[in-house]
Length: 352
Image 1 (cartoon, rainbow, N blue to C red):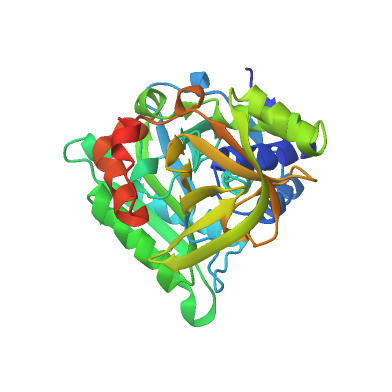
Image 2 (image 1 turned 60 degrees about the horizontal axis):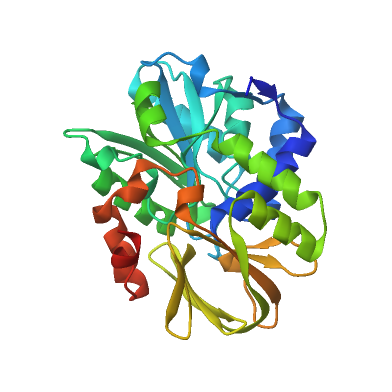
C-alpha cells in the first residue's frame, strides 16, 4: 500500500480495529479517539510504508506501559512527545521513523501525535500486530541479540506522582524498571524505546499492522451488532465462540498489570492485561497469542478487560495466532513463561 494521509475516518477505524486486535488490552477506545483527534487537529499525520526506508535507518518504538485500569493514571499529550524528545537527545543521532509497539484501542494511533509534533515520519509497522503484556514481548526479540543496550524513556503522572525517567541497560532490566516507573507515576507512562535498524524491524516485527487495524475497524463500523461482530471474526479468519452475560468478574491491579478472570456464557477467560486463555468444561478453546476479544452484543463495541462488569452482554471472538501479524517474540518460549507464572494455568504446551 502506498503512503497515505490519515483522516478522521481512518483514525476512528484504527482505534476500533486496534481495540479488536488488542485482545483485551492496548488502552481505552475513548483515549485512543482523543489522541487521534488531537493529532489530526495539530497537523496531517502521514503513514509511510516500511519499504520507503533504507535498511540502516533508525526506527524507535513509542508505547504506553502500565495498567489501563489504574485509578491514578495520568497522561497528557505533551508527555508523549517529551518521552521521544528525551530519547532522541540520548541517542545523539537522527531518528528516521517512529512506530507503535502493538495494536490496541489506544496504541494503534500511538505515534500519530508524536509524528505531527516532531516531524519524524510515522511508519505502518508495529512491534507486534496484537497487544501483549510485557515490554520484552514488544521488543522484537532483542533479548536474543548479544550485548544489545536498550535505551528507554518514560513520562507520566501529575503532582507528587509526576515522573520523567531514562534508563539504558539490558533489555530485561530496562523494561522492568520502566514498568516500576509506571507504578510510581500512578499506573501509566508514555514511553520511547529500543532503537533498531529498519532491516531488523522488518524481520522481527509486524509490517502493515496499522493498515490492518484500519481495515478491521472499517469492517466493524460497517455493520451493526451481532452482524458486525460476525463480519470482523470472518475477516480475521476467526469465529464467534460465545455470546452471553458476564456472570463473574475479578480484576486486581498488581505490579503495573491488570490481572483477573471473567466468566461469560459458561466460558472462563483469564487475562493479564490481555486475554490469555479461554476454557469451558475443562476444554481449552484458545491460548495467547491466539486473539481472544470481547465485544458488546448490541453495539459491537470492543470491551477491554479493564472495562468489564458483571451483567454485560458480550460476544467472544477467537482468531488463531496463525492468522495474525505477529512479532518473532511470540515464538520465544522464554518470553512466554511468565504467562504461566501469572495466570497459574498451563500455556506453553498449548503454544509450542
